[in-house]
Structure formats: structure tokens, C-alpha cells
Image 1 (tube, one colour):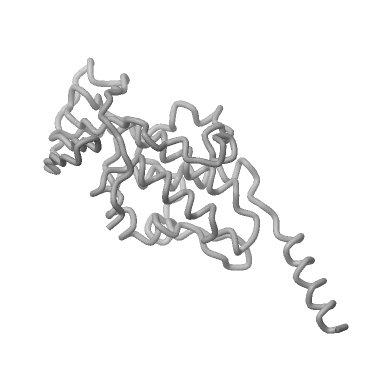
Image 2: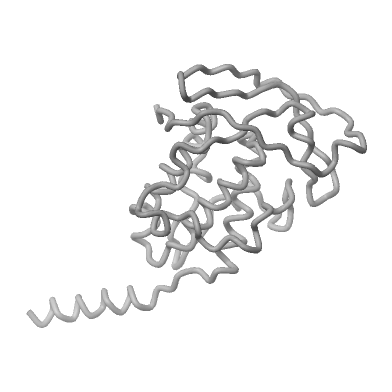
Length: 220
């Protein structure tokens, strides 16, 4: 009995000694992860901003080891399934550093840095609400359901629609081709071909937002 009590005390002590990330740390980790997801998964601006919110909500929810793959992780996956196309979601699951971005090593550690060792390099500018988002769209603030379910996300990557994203190094990245997913009638029409084109003065700063219909895609 005494041994059991001591074990319980030790468990409580370990749990209480574990600390959640500070907001600044969670914000930075979510930004770095989202930037690389946007780059590899070819996200639109709307998707990138939603992915940042989802990643930040997940980072802020972590307090102890058990949280990493608990229901906060499941909620993150569900939220992302509403934002990403089927192709993007499958690509996301195939990359462990995206799908399981956090692991425990005497504290929270992040797999993304095994692939991207330069922690100061970002491909894109920060999301427009980087300085203001504080979890307004998380499950707790939305009646314990996903804020992203049923919402519409632009996946049009034509040059006129996706007017370029300036990287931190001052290089503009443009893509051509369309990546259209109509979730309302389960019609998929994708052309994944991309090319780099020279931007003009009118293709610098404005980010475009269009609507397509949205339902949750299959994860398989």
C-alpha cells in the first residue's frame, strides 16, 4: 500500500513538473511547421493560414507526454482533413515530421528539424493573423467541434489567382496549373504541374481568396 502511494505521488510530481510550452514557443514552432507544410504540400494562402491556426492550437494544448498523441492530436488531424484536399492529406500522413511532428525527449521535441536544420529560414511570409490569433478557432472555443468542417478553401494556384508569396530571402515563388477539389460532388480535377514564372509589378502582394464547396475527405 505504501509503495502504491509513493508511486502515485511520483506520478503526480512528474505531471505537475511538466510545463506546457510558452505561447511564444508554441507560436514559433507552429509557424516553422506550417511554413514547411505550405511549401511541401503546395498550400494556398487560405489553407496556409488555417493550417497555422490548427498547428498553434495543437502546440498550445500540449502539457505532458501523453498529450502528444492523445485527443489533441486526433483533433488536429480531423481539422486538417477539412482544410486539405485528399491528395494533400495523404501526402501529409506520409510525412512523419508533419503527421507526428512532436515527440518526447525529456521534454517536447520536434521532428521537422531533422529535415530542416536551418531554423531561421522560412519560405513564406507570416500568416496575416500571426500576431493576433490566440486560439479563437480551437475546439473549446467552438462548442467542442471543428471550426473548419464545412468551410471553403481556395485551391486555385494559377498565377493570376495566387499572386506569389514572398519568402524571407526575398524570392517570389509562383506556380501554375490548377488544384481544384469539389467536395460537394466528390469531383477531383488536378493538374499538379508547376513552373516558375517571372513576376511582374502587379503580381507582388495581393493574396486571392475564392470559394469551393467543402466536406471532409476520406483519409484512405
